[in-house]
Image (tube, rainbow, N blue to C red):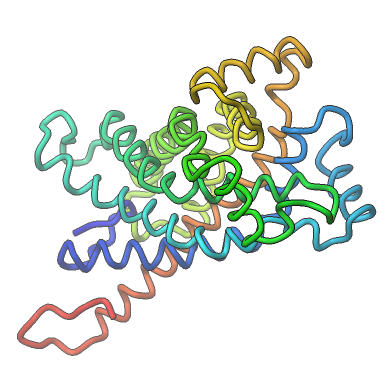
Length: 316
């Protein structure tokens, strides 16, 4: 079984387990390092006048609320981010292995890049799986991130969960799920990443698992930066949807928010937070994929060092 980087991990169950473990570790590392930029993104996308840009937002938050405010909403990230990243990477690798076996148009010829349809489908499935945890995480996290006073219903993770469940119902935790899937950020990212990686392996003339780790990081960074900019308008609507209460259906709420934003703030509102989103997502994906690759190679080297026995060794 092969990872997206072409590293063989033995049997498929072993590979799936490895994907989940590596994804969980990579997700925790990236979220810890980059959470302040996500807090700035949420503030910029929901505030009309308070902040002039990323640097001004960081300095203003630190001056008015202290440096701890950069990490508002981080407790729920600690709880859900690692499992969500495990689902994300595990679903992507599983889909990439399974789909071509059962659906002919997802297959590629030897030496050719994966079909665009395969990258899009695997990215979509990975996003749909991970959004089951990312959406409630974002609902709670973003409501905590945008609060500017201590006297709030979202002053702690427990208070936030209790308040949302009591006043708006459990379905609120998955508000914006389909809108998150509809942003297509993950499918766009994986499509661009896979195509660029194929061209790089052809240019270097080596297997993907032997590419310099810096190449993997650079391709991941560039793919994420472009997809983050392209999908920012939908993310603005999704963020505002998650932190606002309405009584209509989800689709009508999203359309209402988009129309109201356009009328009140103009087209500029839909690019709000784009620099902060790039500064959060591009290093996030870059660190996640780099960490995933390094951890995968470490597990692989450990597996190869085990003595040969009568059965296939596990990756532990």
